[in-house]
Length: 126
Image 1 (cartoon, rainbow, N blue to C red):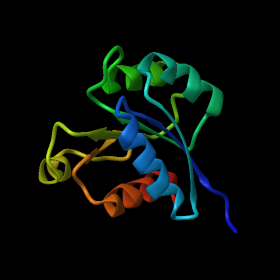
Image 2 (spheres, rainbow, N blue to C red):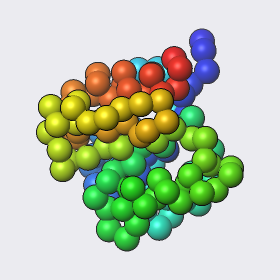
Image 3 (cartoon, helix red, strand yellow):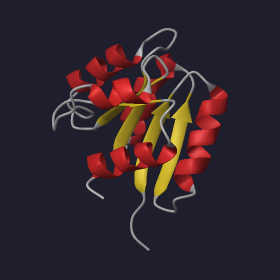
Image 4 (cartoon, rainbow, N blue to C red):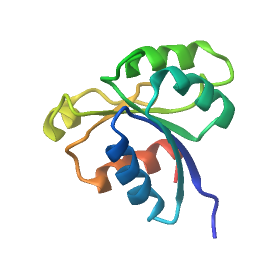
């Protein structure tokens, strides 16, 4: 059995976190920790140093883009790939946004979980 991809998920929607954790861990290849508190997110990511951080964009307190900037400014977390998860865009809009090696990817919350898994695999090199 190979090593699990370690993921920290930050989303203010508890039900979405529970569902995504279950779906991703059911692959047998991922371990997911999550927080619904954006204020706690930086400490959690710094403590866990995951393979990938999945950030909701529209959050109370610190929004996902600001959180991503905070992580990028910290030497210990700067190299962690970021995957934005947003309900503000449709799957087609998310697909049309610029993706690149050094740019965060964006997945719509309306996208099939298989697209999220593929993005995680791409970012983690699996």
